[in-house]
Image (cartoon, rainbow, N blue to C red; front, side, top):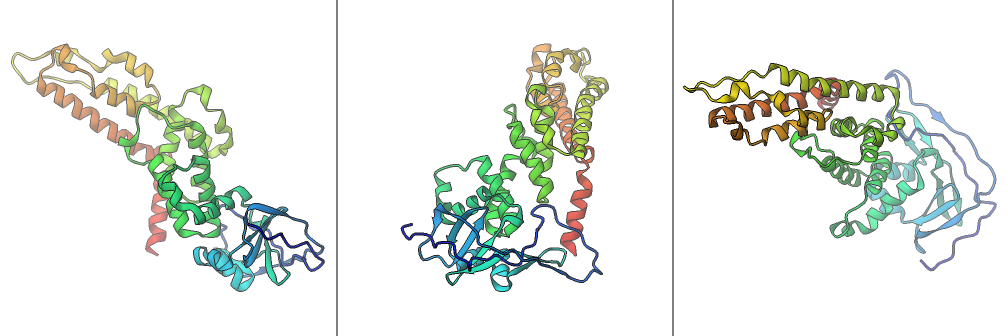
Length: 345
């Protein structure tokens, strides 16, 4: 945009600074009265004009670090409850009832807000602005995973509800809770790790199951990114891998088929242990491994149609049971119960 940026002036003074937590919801006693935490920051602020988000006729300055943007105040307020509250009151009330003050000043008659205290990165906020201006482009160009992750972080914090719905729906498609969505082609472990972090930070438990499974089945040489997880999630990952490996032992040991035909087919002599190669290839990926077993040509071992159908159905049931058991192994049931309880209040 063509208009030059305003020069910093002595009036470019930021006030009302309060560090805010941009991630997990803070818990406060319901008996605690809302409090105000404010501090003054004096002096002038230097800045660099954003190369893209600078509207000559903009009505509000938003700044991260030394990068300043000139945006449309009404547009931000229309799409974001957080900005609407900020513009109306110069403070934002957190979920715990605490007024979170944001550094602000008036520059040449235009309000300036410094958002470093939100702990949201500039690139994440840029993703939101790009979506507001060019969302139609997603019809033609698939957004990158990194872009979607940025949307989740910024749209969650600043309460851009529609953008957050879009980003979460996108990730739900990638990391579906549906067992049938798991295929031979694994999802990138870097994405799975990031999704776990997003799920924990922004209360998206529906993404965790598939993300943990993708990490659990990944080759050891590809999981160096898991050091980004906290110790509790690392423990859950190890526990999941243990249960996935044990699942094969249980399935191979307890399947005892018999044929009701006379004469009987060879089903009783055709045990699942005859498929050791599949077990070895999918030791930590039983969802795909069991699907491979179901797809074998069991008739070549001279099994009758009834026994083949029984075997395939039994394997389907075991696969579904295994997928359901993962909720308990990953401690996801308490999260689901808590969310349901919150929704009913």
